[in-house]
Amino acid sequence: MKTLFFSLFLSFVSIVAFAQNPIDGNWKGSRETPNGTFEVNYTFKVEGNKLTGTWKTQFGESPIQEGTVDGKKISYSITFNDRKMSYTGELVSDKELVVKSERGEMKLAKQ
Image (tube, rainbow, N blue to C red; front, side, top):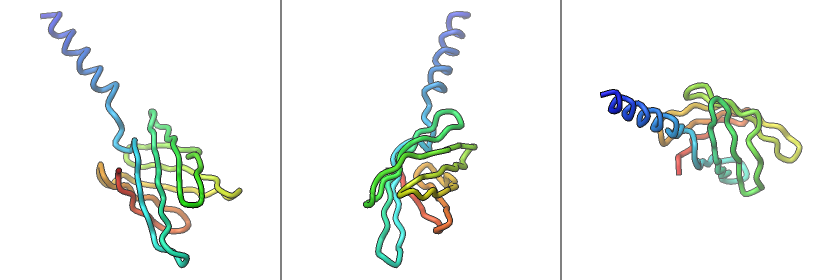
């Protein structure tokens, strides 16, 4: 009986340890601007309450900086062309994330 309990316990711990955060992965979004459609691709990686990854557009790529995760909420910044932009976001579902900045709001879809 002890062996069965121990085996079940180890199985549960393994599943929990390797469970992926729903924010992890590739996300894509776009929004209309006066200069046309602005498309962005994110790759997010969550480790505990730390958010890392990359931000990529037709203009270039930049690493996620100062990223944090608090449940379904995220915050991070990106420095591009010597300009730092701050973002906040919230996971709406496993397939949708909404991010906000001084330039507005953008819905991201999980890829």
